[in-house]
Image 1 (cartoon, rainbow, N blue to C red):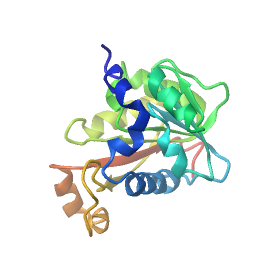
Image 2 (image 1 turned 120 degrees about the vertical axis):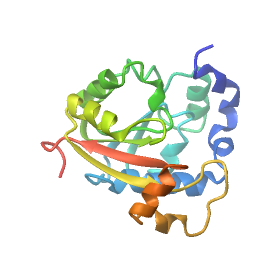
Image 3 (image 1 turned 135 degrees about the horizontal axis):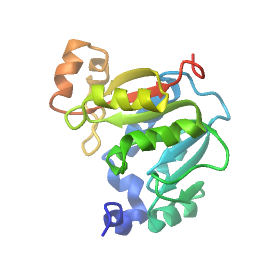
Length: 203
C-alpha cells in the first residue's frame, strides 16, 4: 500500500473529517495563500498538489482552483462536489498551461526528491509556490537551499497557529506575529507557511 492509498476509504467526507473546524482552518489558510509573498489576483490559477478531495477550492472563490491527487477515490469525491481535480502523482504532474500559484499542504513528505520536485514546480509556476513546513521535521535552511536551486530566490514565512484536529484557541492568531515567542512555540507545535518566488516574477 502506498502512503496515499491509506486515505482512500476516507475520501467521501475527507475535508469535514480531517479538521476539527474545517471552515476556520481553510479560511485562514486561504488568506495566507492569497497574501503571503506576491498577492494573488482575481482569476489567478491555483494548482493545489496532494489536494485530497479538493475542499480548499471552496475557500478560494476569486481564483481558479485546480487540484491534483494520486488517489482515484479522492478525485472522484472532489469531482462529485463540482471541484476541478486531476488524478496524478505530484512528482510527475505538469499542468497543460503555466499557473500563477502552486500550493502543497500537509504533503511535502510525498516528494520523492524534494529539489527535483521544486524545480519541476518552478518550471510551470509564474508567481509563487506556497507550502507548509513543520520546522521540527525539516530545517528551513535546507528547504531554502533547495528552493534557491530550483530558481525560487525569494522566501517569506509566517507561523500558522491554527490547530488541525482541535477547535481553534482564542488569541493564538495574535501570537503568529509575536517574533521570538512565535519561534519558541514552533519548537513544540504548529507549522510555518512558506511563500517562495523568483525576483524576476514576483514583487
